[in-house]
Image (cartoon, rainbow, N blue to C red; front, top):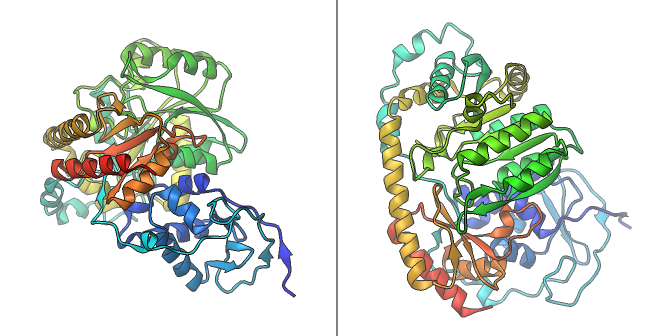
Amino acid sequence: MTDRVRSEAIGAPRLVHLLVGWTDGDGPLHKRLADALHQLIDTGELPAGTRLPAERTVAGALAVSRSTVVAAYEALRAAGWLASRRGSGTWVRRPGVDYPVPEPRSRGPLGMGRQGSVPAPLTGADLADPPESIDLSTGALPGLQMVAEIATKVGAEDYRDLLGHHGYYAAGLPRLREELTERLGRRGVPAHSGDLIVTSGSQQAVELIAQGLVQPGDEIVLEEPTYRGALETFRSRGAKVITVPVRTGRRGPGGVDVDVLERLIARRPKLVYLLPTAHNPTGAMLNVVDRLRVVRAAAAAGVPVIDDESTVDTSLVWPPPPPLAAVAAEHGVPATVFNVGSLSKLFWGGLRVGWIHGPSDLVGRLSRVKNAADLGSSVPGQLLALKLLAHTASAREQRKDQLSTGLAAAEAAMQKLLPEWEWARPLGGAALWVRVPKSDTVALAARARRHGVLVVPGPAYSASEGLREFLRIGYAAGPGAVTEGIRRLATAWRAGP
């Protein structure tokens, strides 16, 4: 008789948070989902023995058809990463290792879709292919053509002086660090190249700060809503996440609610993480007066602040407000600020070049964490970044044109087809943050998927799986796709459950 053990179950909302960005891969949706789950298992974020939600529950949470989840689970079972048994559900395992069968989950009424209920059989609607989907779930922009053109100009002479070196630059190429430091200096940040390290994108920058500074149980203040990659990064460190609301700017100033934030900072959390410029996902912008209040509160309490400016180059107004470190310097406020940035939004996500700038002693610690992680970011990528930075002004104009065109198309379609919905015009970013009155956007996103358009429900950006009346609608796909996607979304909404 096979031994049975108790195991931890993961709920669908938590699984959705862990699967951040899963649709960004290649191939059909079921393959992308299987690959993302495999990565979570391989990194230990889904430990062996973890019970997964039923296929129908996951499908609803991810706004995909049940057949997509069934195919992903089946692929992982075939590879030995998942196992299933009637009455026990589906759980994580590792190939070649025998694990006891988890004890059966509590039963619920058939077909109710709650974890532990017996899945209902597949229906024709579950198996039917939706129309060719339009992806409005992402704010990722296509790469600029100049990237390909300038890549051909990285030649032998650029490598000649480097090849005599071992090639491991934990803090980044010195020339690139100097250029990025000058870039920050032009925006008012008192910067020195020794206080900056190059990272493989802004996501790694946040991860390095979390690894270097955050311990289990530490309190971290994040906005609500917030960038879900940062939320999961801090949670993976065992941090206790405390949230502060973001004002969309529809009625009054936009950005984080500074009144609430000041009270939370006074409690002396370990760290504050903010997106004050072209906030993700709302597109709101924190004004200079409120930025000064933030750095003064942080300095008084001795609390470090991460100023994530990875979206600054999607600002629809230029120049945007100055970075928090620049505001602090101008007013003589001794705040500890980490400036996090990236070239992904400006040039191309595949470039994978970002940075952290901050106090020398703390950046030195993070450089050692970076060295242990990967010995340094790609040298060819950094050489290309150096050449691209000379074309920053042109790239910003192209991005502004793209985003302005997409936003105009999105707002025109929304006003015509969904006038009941509410949103504030974003000042940056590549998406509308929309309130859908008296609706559950998780269910709406699932219906929209069946009508051939992908959007992201509000709970994906919430630390508490809240914000269920909100929806993120990207407009980076081009005006034609955006207009048709919103037409399909309107059809899905009016069709009802």
